[in-house]
Length: 297
Image: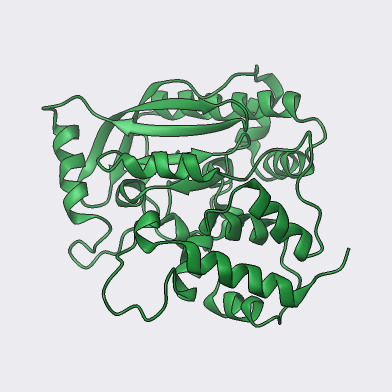
């Protein structure tokens, strides 16, 4: 298959014009001359450069990768048919059976937007952060500031990179860190059993095994498992440690996890979440918030 640049450009423009800014947590404003999202907003949501979006909409530039096409489909809130159309127009085969689903359905995106007072992220079966709401950015940092290939909780945990934006840390005790590390590796063990032919998953595991002695040690003895409800301490750069309940909701037909952070009403953690709803991701004391969840997710 070859790329159809003209039709791909038209499809991207149409999709961008159909998305209401309010549906993706952006202010609508009164000065918008055209309906839908601006190109810079699509770029921010997809984690790519504005120039890249411009070139695609002008029928120029390189053939977009599978990762870029998936990120654009999520940013533009396309359904499965719309996602597949982007892939076909780009001359790329959509992900087939037996591969990890990286497409977040619009209904799930609407759901996480309804959690206006709780941080929520959506993760793939191999730990990719696929979507998040405004409160998740207020708690962890702006995920769009993290390079798309780094937007994976296992890479952030076991393969920290100085090029990542400033990261909020998670876990204040060795016991908590050890427990979440084991859970992280166990989830990959389970994913490897469910998706023996997923190239991206096995490339990730190979990268982790070769780049992290800690991961390699855990992998050698890890039993399969999944993400379970637990308590997590998030070290917020302005508010300090916040102890939160972390519940995992499973979307079974796409094998994705919706992670919801909450706190018991009346506790200091609940007060911190209430404050985060007000301040969002604005700067505190000259310190810019903050990239993604850290190497201790």
